[in-house]
Image (cartoon, rainbow, N blue to C red):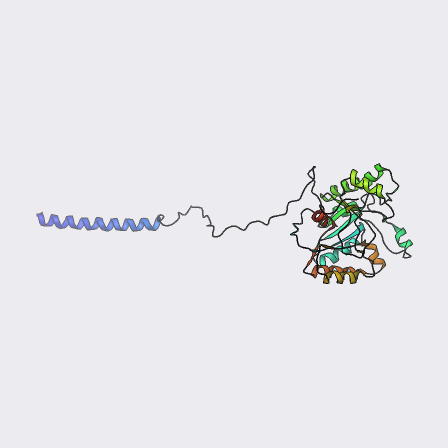
Length: 322
């Protein structure tokens, strides 16, 4: 074989080897992972494209020296030094008509109701109330403890009305303390929120200065609603004898409401309405309550508060008692 043939054969072999090499690269790129792609067994991790949304910040409860959450301290309400108009309402006894009251509240997204209950009278029916009023069919039935634990008053302010709704004016100090303090402790045990207020049972004839001083000095109660009404929009003179504006049965209730809505606040104003649920049945005045709550919630310049929330806002400006 001459040199020319050897050169031609060698050149042909080089071409064959080059083609094979190129083919091998192409086949490898089809079967194996590419450098610019993820391998088949790689775990996909989603990329974060925006900042996560922060969870809403809850207003922390204030607690007492025993770590118990105190009523009225989680509202987030503050005062900025300018006069404001406040509305609050309460109902006594913890009776079954309160369910209808709450239905009206919910209709207007109103959560500022206060209910004063007697934890020593759960489930008791006072038939004498209807009989005394000349309407024997009128119901005055208290919720049972189980019903209240089931959530009747969830989201509302629950406060003290004493264990047994007795007159306190002639009772021994130990009895007054028991009636008030045990009721407060029971309410905390049921709701997990410690009450700071009460309503005097039986009206303003059933307690006296001595009773007030016992409550002030020997219990944890900070305010006590009275029953004598003022027809005015004033702050309380004393926390332990807190006189409301009017009762739910007042003939001038809606006129007072209209006056309050129209008023300009040159100083802090409070419209306080109180009552009993059975009175709404007796006077067939559920529509009055409906109109009242509608007016208060639709007014842009009225701040609706529970009794306890109002106390927490103004506790440093009003003395406990003389």
